[in-house]
Length: 336
Image (tube, rainbow, N blue to C red; front, side, top):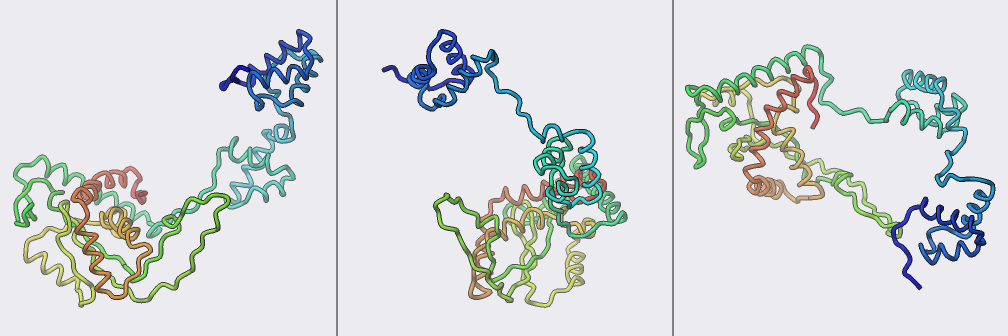
């Protein structure tokens, strides 16, 4: 017996059924020949009989007939308008609530909402602060000033900045980003549970359900000053275990003649430490538990030391694109 054809279409099989039926072949014989030629899965015996009946009634089309049902008849302009009015009145209204209120099937509401109106349900995005118009204006103005500063410095050979060279010595450089240091602070815990996303695993239908206990987070935590982030790596790092004063920092910067660039308030999305460093750091610590602060500090130092220089370069260089996006968004937050 010949090997069944592996690649075929439904229309092709139906055409063969019609051809054999019109030649006078019995449905049982047609099914036998279809199974031998295309395989048992091509068309069941009952389906062969059904198509033979249709062809006997004069059907000539081989395609599927459009499905008729209430959903199609109820998906009309009137119901579409009523559904949209309800959604505009209450953005949190659920599909089954709309269906119950309008007395139409949930499948119809689902089709109107998603296919006709193009709505999709999303969660509200967390932001550091609900920005006022003054906040947004300040963010735009500072972003514009910093972009202009970068353009001027990159094109002005007389403009120099003093910063750390490759060997650790101070040197002059015409590129602002080569000597830009940005800093911030964050909490790191002795016990950092994994995030829900990081703890996800592939599960087979027969696999047991994975479980994890809800751990009480340890109260012990170290609030560490974020290391100075330079394109070549970490250049400054200290703990907040000792008294720290903003005035002392200001005096140190003035003493060595360091320029402080403007930064808008409530804008972690425009700080490399926040949008580029803290996320990978917290993911690295996820699932780890430390007995002492020294163990935690040692792990942090090892993590910083093993970061490639390109990691820091990307974080600093992305500032320009974020300043531009902030301007384009009229001061609103830049998404990650």
